[in-house]
Length: 165
Image 1 (tube, rainbow, N blue to C red):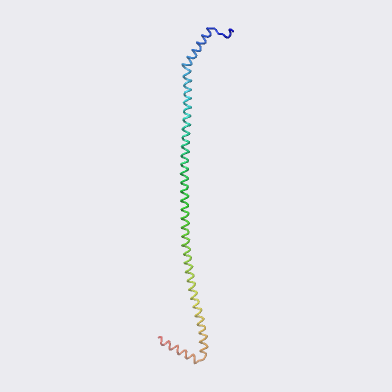
Image 2 (cartoon, rainbow, N blue to C red; image 1 turned 60 degrees about the vertical axis):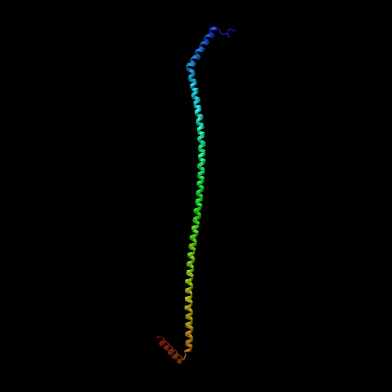
């Protein structure tokens, strides 16, 4: 059992060695350990702060991106409304131009039809007068078959010409 119970001298020197070790650790070791623990804690605090800042920036970026998306959607809607207005305006202008052009074509057609009608009337008159002259010539030939009737006609025509001059 002597192996398990140490001598008083051994205990004393062990106590002195532990006290010197603790004194050396207290003087030079603990400040370094505490300093490294504090720097590590500061580093962790800075990391947490950086993460919070990053989270806030991300939330701000999300809010800004949503704001920009809303603005872009509003601009898109404005552009689409403007394009629809321009389309309607172009269609109306084209419709008005087509009506004007159709009216011009109709007026030209009416004028052409009127000219054709006048030409047809003139041609009809010429043909009727030609037929009338042919008929009159045939009638006069039949009546003037004898010489006496011819001389009377010539004499009456000469009398009429003298009266006119």
